[in-house]
Length: 75
Image (tube, rainbow, N blue to C red; front, side, top):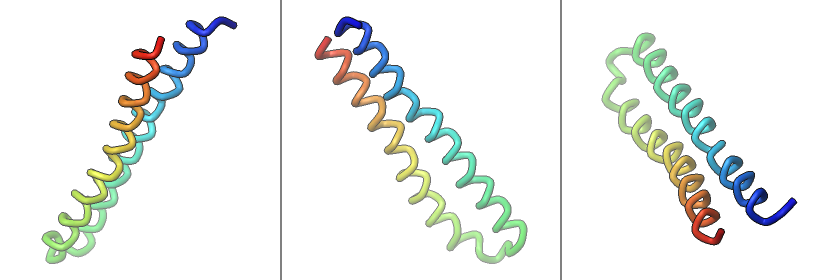
């Protein structure tokens, strides 16, 4: 396998972070909806933590994008 093919495989593996981030974001917001449905008066407190969790999950996708671009730039 030459270096060009390995770079494309590496970019594809780095892009798999998007799938994980999509699943994570879906889980964060589904659990928020479930928690608010059970206890509506706690929505204000829950939403703060949900947005923090959303930001942390989204960073994994951004890290995957950065790694893919680094691999693409070194090719």
